[in-house]
Image 1 (cartoon, rainbow, N blue to C red):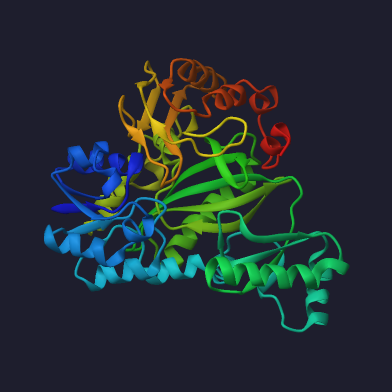
Image 2: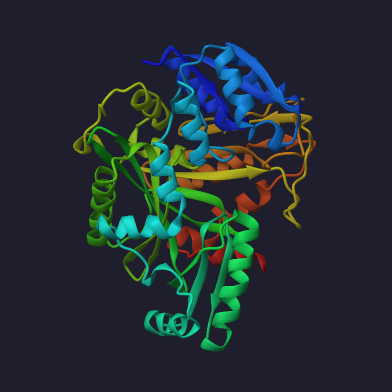
Length: 446
């Protein structure tokens, strides 16, 4: 087992990693920016080091500072959490080249999955269902671009190969606007991601967002932990998630789960990962793979009983997977609300001092949060401040439990999206199940 882990992140995920390390008897090092010196995991870690000023570029994205902190503390491994450097192949490579273990996939796997064109190609070869598309970068010849788009069928969506977070994509409804849209997306892709490569896919009109959680040890063993539905999104950012995904075609679901496991073995995947799909008319279409632990991993933990972060740590220690597919059983249903420090009308971040914080409790209620009364939410980072997760024997009971938990949650001093979350878990269409990725924005009039 690893001796000491440096946690290269902040907030609730840093605290989540610290707890898993403590339970496994692993010492912890917390790195933090100046403004984050009072974070809960910084107080609880065995050691802590300030790695720079408040801006992420000078702290949590500062690779030399993080590696120097690992050297100073004689760390065994570095856990990147999610966001920041979690899917940065250069960081993973530098960590390993510096003599530390990167808790995640190999750098070449992160690169493969970070380029959407190569990822789709690899998944298609592995038998994972994909969206009909250009099968690579769009052609340089305008006539060929038009031919490919006609073959796919309008509407199409032009996407940046290195894209993510909803940026660098454009829907095209007819031939007349195709070439201009490709040019604009290429320009945006170069500006956002430093890579102007774009590709084309069929634009699905009303899909759901369904994802499959996997674990693999890089030694030929891989399992899935079933699926999640993350269709309630605003501006491509998930708001509420649940597991398992409701109302799926069981035959295509089982085929998709198997294909994801087979793909992990084919690419020799190591660690925790998530295959993201669009789901429409009973069919799954691969869109990307996240090579890290997800924000929404707790809902999967609640229905499978598997501690995903502990499994990451065991795999990084060189241990083979202790779990076999037949060990994984679904138990009930879980739903998660992301609580953000934001204005309910404008959705703009609302940092400030938390005068009072009361977390909900009771059977089947879990709260993953770094908040405490007196803590000041900084303006510098992501606005998510807590996740409230509820588990129950079935979906209806889980939603009722989450509704009650939200009623019990009090955060005074700053604005939050708790009222929006209350509205969502009591929304008749969401309760019925199967809403698509556009539902929330239409509901909010965005």
